Length: 201
Image (cartoon, rainbow, N blue to C red):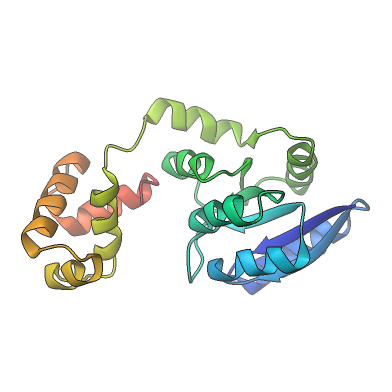
């Protein structure tokens, strides 16, 4: 029996996934959470073989949860699920230790097949997304530029970002300027939007 943990903040999606996967005779859903920061604790308690993680969740996102899982519960393999087929997400998911990446609009049988293949030790990636990732190249943003854009997402001021990241305001402005230049836009709001669309954040 393949033991599954489901993490998705949308109750309807999570419940539908649990129902659909529960129909497979070799699957058992042993835990469900709605927040990224609940994933590790749930995995430590339920000991799943596979964690199916949505990328966008409160607490911490699925990519951070995947990285934490690979460190804290290394026997649990991760498959990322997302509605957004963004190439940058795939690259970051693989860096976080994910063994699979499936878009949410994939057929149910494709998801079930991905689970079984990952249990066998394979890596499973949506082929269209893999091709787009290879074509798109790596994110040009440095780690700090990414951090500053993430902090700027909700309209935070330079002073807010400075306090949150323990950087001087001048340093924050420099990182924002570099990120704006690398995304080829005119301001930080557009830089956040472009970087987000490309999966760099």
